[in-house]
Length: 208
Ligand code: SF4
Image (cartoon, rainbow, N blue to C red; front, side, top):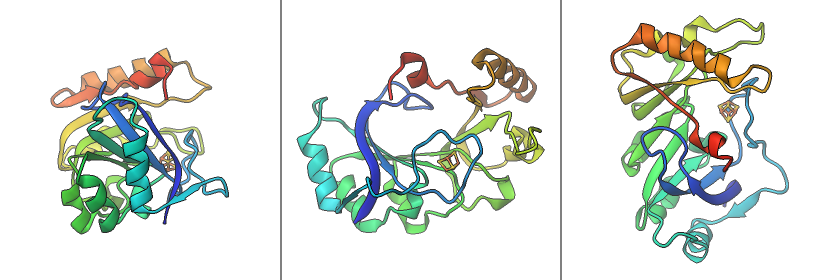
């Protein structure tokens, strides 16, 4: 049984797959407790507990967009939950994308994924994920003191094996989005090179 907060369809709002209609499977549980986390991931008695077959059947019977091709496995931290039998089942009919904080390796599960986004919440020397397609650094990255965590500065990640590197302005209710965007864009201009700005399109559109 896999513990799941919800299964839903929407457009992907960030990164290279932006605008793509996808299934999202949000798994319960995370191995981090970020102070700015706005995701419902904490396990509760309302969670769905489904087998791989039940998940697959749900996807087939509830597709609102004929022939949805992508499934995004997200969380929380999905690597805590996913395993080979689930990925083998889903891979038969879908392309698989993963959203992870990078604190756990994928090992033999790596080859099942067509796209991996890593949004690290720990410094680069603590990352265990082998590689990713999109590296998404939240910037500025705060710590409890209200200071910026310099260990999470994008320059610390310049050698990480990622196809694309993004800076995403931190989204917190206490600071205007425009201020955060200006800070991130200033940083982007300093980094130059391969870095891009990641925009959370789904939040502007007001969709999940
Ligand atoms: S890693 Fe992501 S889901 Fe987990 S606590 Fe941090 S922000 Fe929330």
